Image (cartoon, rainbow, N blue to C red; front, side, top):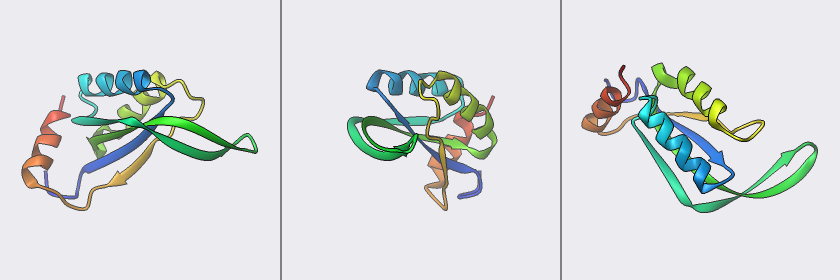
Length: 110
């Protein structure tokens, strides 16, 4: 896999550490992600929901995958997540270690 052409980082927040771990385990087991970092220290989120400003404690997932797996990854996250509208933000990877990017691509292949 050429650097920066296929690798993606997906950000997802969860309402509990248990939910974050469950989603991480499931998407790696299904080869939808090569690696998921579960930020186990809670993050404080402030956002607008149903016309109110809300503050919540959440747990962040940093998911490493490829563009070819995004559609199935999104479906899996939405199916496993407890939120009505889960965060699913995709960030492109401009470059990285060639060995890591190769490993990432191999890890998500069927």
